[in-house]
Every structure is written in C-alpha cells, then in structure tokens.
Length: 117
Image (cartoon, rainbow, N blue to C red; front, side):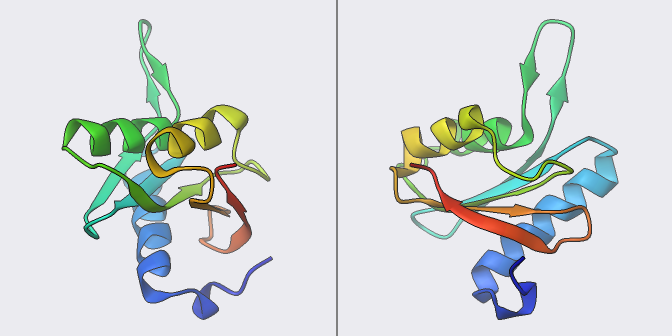
C-alpha cells in the first residue's frame, strides 16, 4: 500500500477526483486522468444496456474527445486489487506504456501504482 500523503500533489488530486465521482454517482468505480497540459478528466462506470465502459475507459475516452494528445497519469478507485488489462490498454493507447496508473481503494488509499505497460 502506498501512503497517499506521500503522493505528488497532482497525483493525489486525480485520486481524490476519482474517489469523489465514485461516491457522488454511486458507481462501482471512479477514475480520473491527467493529460499532457495538466487538464483532468473524471468519469464513473458506464453501464447501459447497449454500452459498458469501465470508469478508466470512460475517462480516457473523455480526454480523447476533448483533444488530449497524451496522458501524464491515471487513477482508478475500485474494490478490485488491480487495474484490468483493458483499463491499462486504454491508458497505454493514449499515454504510452510508461504512463502510471494509480489503483486506490474506496477510502482513497493507493494500493498499487503500475504502468500502462
């Protein structure tokens, strides 16, 4: 487990944003990504009959739709112990394999930081 207070302030911000959207919207996951200009995009899980996206996939899609060219970092707040392969792939597609993905529990504690790989 990573001490969230030891995180870079910008990384702590995206974890807080991801946690907030999860709680506010009552969804299983919340996510936030930061693009190459420092803008953040926040999203929750999308679970429609015709469309299913994880929170992190949705946040990446929002960044792309808003004109982001790359990602600096991503965060997901989830009950899961790790970021799924599909989530890491979405981050990798926009940010590259070295983009950090912070995985935090519902309390905002960062469990692990991995790269999009």
